Image (cartoon, rainbow, N blue to C red; front, side):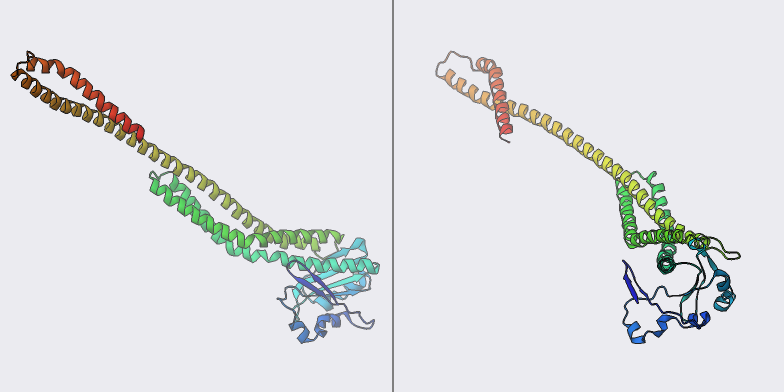
Length: 353
């Protein structure tokens, strides 16, 4: 038994030596894992993702080819000559009654160490292939939602050119913010799966390259099968991830433009408000100056009245000064002094504020 802990999964590899008289078909009918107690298997946490029954037979490729019908029946096979012709492998990539995919390896001339590495590569190819495909259902599930969000963004962008009021711009900005939140939630939910899928796909391609595979007559190569079946699924995942990233970029740009429009509109409103306030201040200043003039006139009027009464009283007691003439001569000086005094009082109050 070999146990390996990976980032997302664990692998258990059970080895069992074939008896010389044992038939290959019998060995595929009874995988090594079937000999493990059920209680032990039930204690393994997690879900079973990949189960492989791989048999290595020390036979030349021609002799092992005669066993293919017995092992795989009429199923379509995938395989090829491996390790520079030192071995060959076949599989039908379908599950048997035990839920295992079957791989038959004919070891013609490889040494034990190289045979072990070859077996490990074959097991890793199938394992990483299934791990890479975990992103495919997710990509298909979110693709319609991405299309809906793309259409929603196109609608919002189309309406942007026709809106004229600040309230409409703020409403559109809130719509874009809500859409951006949905996209960020989806990105957070899918980014790891898509990134892991790309990494697993790269590992599959590396392991296939390590096999040094060449074609066997009448059998589709493993590399060709992966290119035709796995690569399209990976391109679909990459396309969905790319659409999600571009959608996020487009929303970011649209939000930036709308933010700019809102800021400009707010600045224009502020400028208009400041201009209105300035106009009111000027009007208040003019009104205040008018009131000051009227106040000076009123104060001067009462002061001149008092002076006139005083001059009339003086004339009664024999003063030679004519009250009317003296009042008329004093009027400009009184008015000027009062006006000057009122302005000085206003300036002192302004400085105090």
